[in-house]
Image (tube, rainbow, N blue to C red; front, side, top):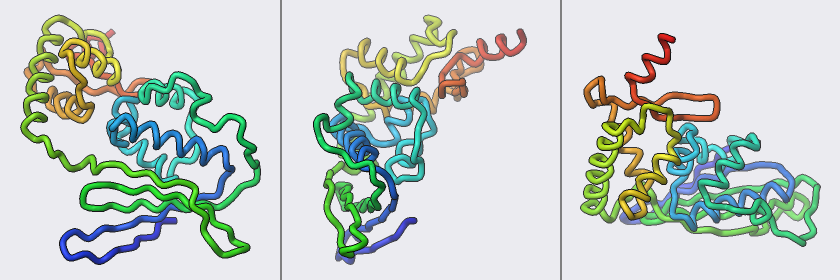
Length: 234
């Protein structure tokens, strides 16, 4: 269930969406750690989804309780993207965790420059909400560094065209793999959203240098279009 709450403001009108779920406490602890790690890595839900090779709304659907269970393979890929080296960091070790299912509400408030996540446990008997956590994320749809972003996009585009000529995309490459290569060769951290933009523009290249997005059993991969066609003929 989704509830919309609008807060009146003279300039920007903040809005709050409420998402509800009934689950065990361990699921909420993992949920909290997942969002915390994403925010600490300065990644948007769309960027994590992209690096995982999933549809771009994948993480958003998880964070809004639309996806309640995910495959272990996806958990491991997510941990790699978020640089979580130990699964134990996703839960509070030594804490007495109840197996009883409780009702929870996630309030997501969009402000002019940030997103606030507030999770409440609903006590139906007492008719009250108990705060479980509050996290603050930036607005990833706002770019305060447009000039540097344009410069980075240009550098990524030049580099990827060089990798095409070198035959890098003759084999299927996962998004996270391409991202790590860009960071290494450009000797800087590359924002995944900027890499996404460049990869989206690559299909406009001539046929012999065109890169296509392909669905594989384990997620999205990128490959040279000409190589993909030759593989299909075989």
